[in-house]
Image (cartoon, rainbow, N blue to C red):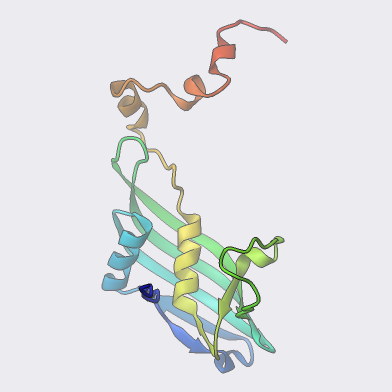
Length: 177
């Protein structure tokens, strides 16, 4: 049996939770090498900018982060593969919580809406850079299409989503309400 290597974040900004005793503002920005590695991880052509301003506030062993993430990246169109420039500027919110450790990897757990923004940590350090990277990953539209998508569909003999979905056959029946 071989051990799987531990995941090493491309954009790591480790921070001791004691640095969030009172509300504290933190700016994290990925350098060129970090952006290049994240682009590979997220299947992007490239990332030109990734930065976030996050205000941290600690409550016992939980640390809440609120702020804004800003990114500029190039993504391939899901249909034509043309390069599409995307600018992202949106609010982020996450909560760092101590690792629970009371579930097995294949165990099914139930989440509510507050659980989805939680990032587990071990020891006394959180990784603000990885939390920002994960926020970027969640913001990427995996089905982004550009202006050449319809022409690429037509050239490949593929209809538009509206004309090839499960209800496309009903369109031709001429049913009226």
